[in-house]
Length: 203
Image 1 (tube, one colour):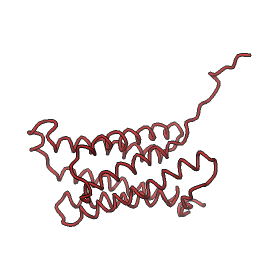
Image 2 (tube, rainbow, N blue to C red; image 1 turned 120 degrees about the horizontal axis):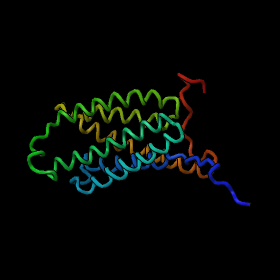
Image 3 (cartoon, rainbow, N blue to C red; image 1 turned 90 degrees about the horizontal axis):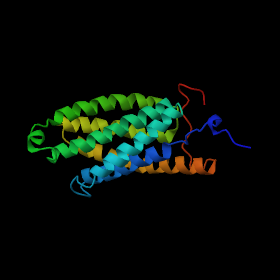
Image 4 (cartoon, rainbow, N blue to C red; image 1 turned 90 degrees about the vertical axis):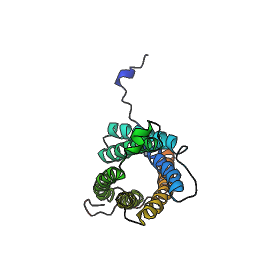
């Protein structure tokens, strides 16, 4: 008897483990440079493009298939952010020519960070009804973009705030990525995420 595979519906696996791992890794590497643990940007760019960018975009595409608007939007927006950041670093390093490097205005990045702060704030509200681990990551991302924005506009001390918050995003991100992977693999809660707050939805 021949199986009719055209009638089999293939449902993508939850891509959260991959997407959050990509975020955790790139924020770890990027924060190491901001905090002075490492130097230069050359070896950060590939991880920004492939882990910060591509991994989160893969997660976004699969979350769209799962009709998870929150996951798809978050992974997609932050994935594209890291790809843009990678190119921004390349502009700064003169990869595309000295003229473009000389014409860069850091305040334009400040406007981008402001836009992402607005985005992250309402995504933080959405994360309240997901789990506390994800809420913590989004809240730290809010601090990161606030720090990056104010640093770009010339306010002293906010670059360090951004760097510390970025490192904390990485630490919580590794925990969440571990939980998303192990919980799905074993089919039961191995790593607790914390219940939703229940403000907008009944838990």
